[in-house]
Image (cartoon, rainbow over all chains, first blue to last red; front, side, top):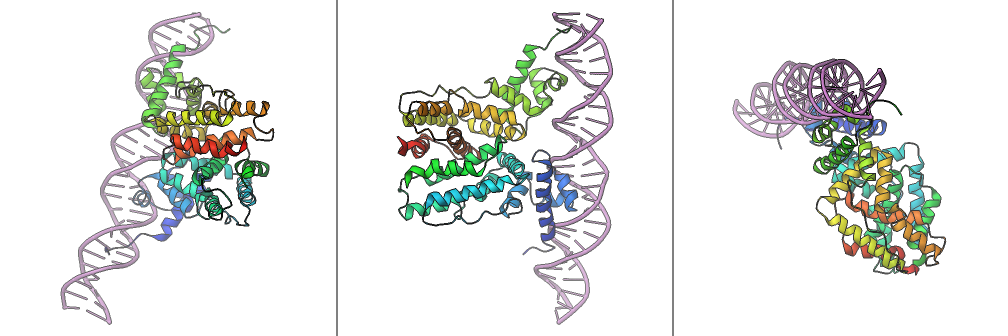
Amino acid sequence: MTRGPHRSESSRRAILESAGALLLQHGWSGLTVEGIAAHAGVGKQAIYRWWPVKSGIIADALAEGALLPSLHETPDSGDVLADVTAWLVEVAQLLGVPGRSDLIRSLLGAAVENEQVAAALGERLGAAPSAVAGRLSRAIESGELPPDVPVQLMTEALIGAVLLRVLSREPFEAGDARDLAAVMLGQRR
Amino acid sequence: MTRGPHRSESSRRAILESAGALLLQHGWSGLTVEGIAAHAGVGKQAIYRWWPVKSGIIADALAEGALLPSLHETPDSGDVLADVTAWLVEVAQLLGVPGRSDLIRSLLGAAVENEQVAAALGERLGAAPSAVAGRLSRAIESGELPPDVPVQLMTEALIGAVLLRVLSREPFEAGDARDLAAVMLGQRR
DNA sequence: TATACGAGACGATACGTCTCGTGTTACCGT
DNA sequence: ACGGTAACACGAGACGTATCGTCTCGTATA
């Protein structure tokens, strides 16, 4: 162990939370290190010491759940179509909250610059084993889906469709969720 | 018409082309108005006069085809699966060119800030009537696909899957193209 | 004569590095 | 066991650089 004081946990949390709040307020292009430092009551060096790249702050905040609420576990009722539909409807509700769409768009901006943000965002939106990706894998194991269904591509298509809506500033509603699930899985039961 | 000189077409083109070259070189976050002006041999005011927002330059460059080559018209062989597969394979080849992936990622960064960039990007990648979206519509008209297939969502899922790969810095190969087309249309003929 | 042009000066803002003085904490000698 | 001390993170902010967006020139063109 090295001598001297160690990383301050309270500063770390204040930085992550301030970054989240300011990202929501000003968007990715309006997010400044000086702004985060001031809002968190922290010296700039305390940020640059631990995050050489600004987008790394967002990656950490995202990974710790300080930006987006967790989706529920994707249910496993034995009916993939119903389960994926339920999951997509929950995503649609998530996007229905005012400002959420803008936040996710800002996260996309950060993801463009930082691969880890992209990974954390994908994880949180559906690539996690507890989300769609996992549900689809289980459907193959149980024989509900044929084994040659490319789970990763299917997951990417689902999340990608949603993100494209976010990017184009059009709503993604519950009806879209049902249509999308049906078109991806409907003929396959 | 007002008196005096009018907008210089040569400056306009030099600005759009410089913006494209510098976007490719330095990415969206590294693109500066001063850099564009210097590269184009143009005063800054000539840029700010016509593009109050930087991302607007990218939107125009994209719409004029100065950034991405046009895809071929999606063929209409009477076999939707084959045609969509061919189109996706061409997209995969487009992404195979070195630096193309980075360019598209930069465009995504601009799209986050500017709705018109998002629209132009979607248009150029598949939402145009001459691309997949159009081919799917025609498949419904000809009875090749049932009329309740949501063309827009399907197009978004296809493009979205590709863009998610770009975002996560993973390759999108011809094999993925075939799998994706099959999973979206395979059981539906 | 009205207006766009290239050039660049200007103050403002954010960058990333650095240097303070202060406080905290593991280690080491007694 | 315990106190000293050396190493290091902390908040604050000064610093030079880069880019922003506005503005003001003098020139050129319709």
